[in-house]
Length: 308
Ligand code: SF4
Image (cartoon, rainbow, N blue to C red; front, side, top):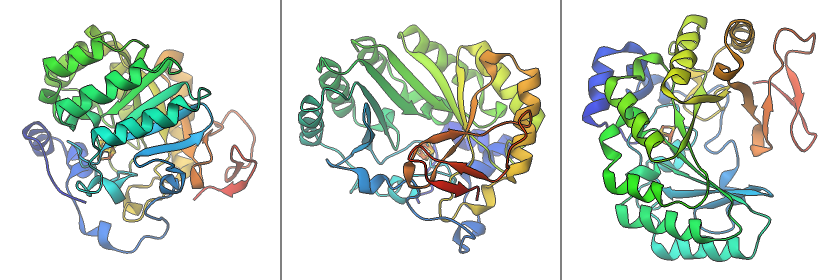
């Protein structure tokens, strides 16, 4: 995976250890992992049209570009986020998405992701959002991004204008991992997205030596609510090859989330989930209030798994 950082990220890397660990490569990435595959969610097997992943009956994921402004070392899609050439979409690809969706009115929600959609060229970004927004069967549009954290300057006025033109409710999911990411520029970028009419939510991944402690997550989720971002999910780190060193002890994660549940408001508390192997659903982890087996669960298809 490429190592490419914006000036904003570089500055953060220099002042925050927690941020540096997320973005600076280390030797452990190249040591063979105890667990993990390149594509644990099997996205490539559920791609009926280039760049469109269809796993759940009512929604699809559209990967607009493999390019990103962040290059997080723990990225679940690190297999493709470096592959800029292969992951470059064109207007014809978007036309094929639209054809696919027009034949499937049961799909009502599109999640635009990547890489990072805000890094895509403005013509492609505009074309994707306009054409998808015009489809009558699409009722909700979501965009996943981390530019707010890694390169807030990429939220240009022309892109914000496109967001304002989206017909449907527009939800923007932002990856936040640590309170150090909430710089003045990031908070300002969040404000611009809110003013453009987007509804904002966060996604967080449990990361060893980055955010695997109560105080850090308490501060992060509290601050997010204060700036207008609703904490949505916190994930157990996916078993992706090369990121074993980021994975936190499961019992420790549960203990932190249980304590947070006691002390955070419901609004500030995200759902703690495991993205199940083969992409069979995001299964909520029961907290310490329940007397249940710590290590076994069933996915959306009823398959049993052990936590790894
Ligand atoms: S922002 Fe998302 S897509 Fe980009 S590197 Fe980070 S996790 Fe991967």
